[in-house]
Length: 108
Image 1: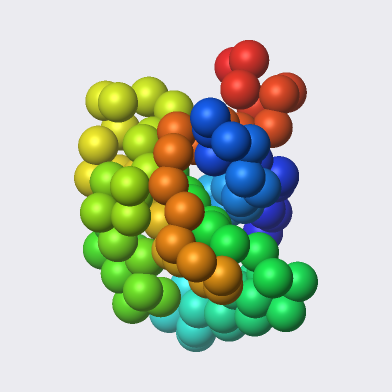
Image 2: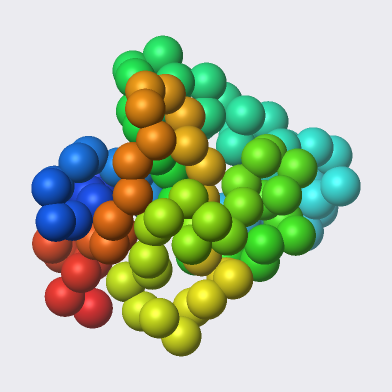
């Protein structure tokens, strides 16, 4: 699992972009993915990260308290992603803006 540095514009507030999560078929249904997401969220909170967002199926992340990013005042890099761009506020005062991935990913 991977989280990359992103930001919320226009102020450039640091944010995390959670990478796609994949678990080998033989390890699925054993809570491996759940443990990985919980670990990432715990470390992110320990480092006072404000927001984490992911491009993925909303139902897969709802149990981790992710919700549509627009409900947090965050817009996806591509408006077509809509509800498939959930986010979670972690620490500090709520912050919104346009989510931007790190420059190598933003160019894709």
